[in-house]
Amino acid sequence: MKLPILKFPDDKLRTKASKVETIDDTIKTLVKDMFETMYDSDGIGLAATQVNQHLQVVVMDVPDSGEDYQLILENRTTKNKLIKKHPLCFINPTITKKEEKEIHTEGCLSVPNFYAKVERFNHIVVEALDENGDPFTLEARNLLAVCIQHELDHLQGILFIDYLSKLKQKRLLERIKKQSL
Ligand code: QAP
Ligand code: CO
Image (cartoon, rainbow, N blue to C red; front, side, top):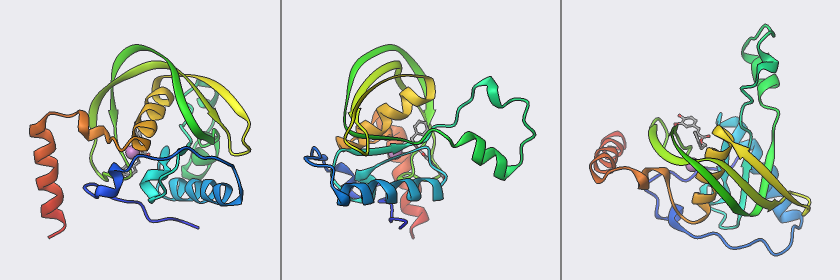
């Protein structure tokens, strides 16, 4: 089932997520629905906070930009099938190592049609449970590392736009207010 996504400036996006105590059928259904919602919205990452579920659950599928796909003749469908092949689920995630700051352009399903440059770590290590409750440790770089930091921020009620200047935040709010008139 596709879930509705909270949009900035909804205050519910500021809620801090609680730790998942047991990975039961409710959590498994939430994970499944979050993947469906993310893929259907053409997203690469989604935090439970964004679908108004205040639990430490994140789903992600970051396109692989590796050389493996360069020789394949692509169309819209094959591209999606080949590229979207790294579904990851993080439950109760924690970042245990952060290295190398870099500036990346980010977007967010909760702030549609807005993109901005944010400084993040380019190399991280994250520990989490997967959707079956099995612990894993993942070393991530580049876009995957950026996406993990962005999604973990959502679980703390933090949005990428919080890192922008007050002037840029003010302009964004004005733009959103005009759109919803
Ligand atoms: C977070 O964001 C992210 O405005 C995931 O019209 C994004 O999936 C981290 C999206 C980029 C690092 C880099 C945004 C889709 C998707 C939009 C997303 C839109 C349609 C955002
Ligand atoms: Co986001």
